[in-house]
Length: 339
Image (cartoon, rainbow, N blue to C red):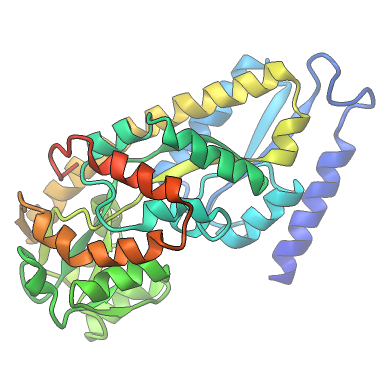
């Protein structure tokens, strides 16, 4: 922790020293941004980051450079987001679960079945209410440039197919340590355990847990198919992300650069969405080829009914407009629940 904080402070100091003497308002200043995320260099996050970097640097003839720090090199999400509030890190791609700890309105992304298909999520990102989420983030020191990555956290387990809520009864399921996510799986009847993602394979191998939930590609690349047997296209929770900038850093940019980074984030998010769609289809096929039995669920309503009390309990603690936004999202055509 100390080393990471020292690194952030040193990088912040270096960024300040790099500012042109004439100030940020000067024509075409030299700018360097650090973009941090916690996934590996082959991940969709990193591919999106590389696309963003490529476009920003091309559009500014290399005067605006982006340095990417993958795999949590600058710290994990909480550390980086705290740094962004003071401007020591300029950009990140966070999972929206942890982001809700900083911007409570983003808890809407953590509630079960808010989104039910990739197509629905992409359409939801265009709703006017999403701009209110961005305003809420701005109040906390963040500029949200783009919501993207319409993927879901599907349940994979070693015990039985999941076709109805009762099939979760007694399953030892690992999920993220986000309270609403834990409460969701408890409402379905599972025994919930939270642990670092790096420990999940061993826990499955030892029988300490029966299952885990994540998007298809991550489940496959982590080789969980070696210790499990069943998966369903059940979009209990989503796996969306966002391009987020430090408001301190963004506000210092000249207008021409602001337009460039916003457009680059938009393009990079769309690019990542296309990759995600292809990778999810391939990963599901790979899981099935490895012996995983796939259950397609057409009627989500029993699962929604079982978990809706969790959503309502959390919505009571939030501004009324967040509940209105969730209702608007859920009223969109759901489409196919698999990616």
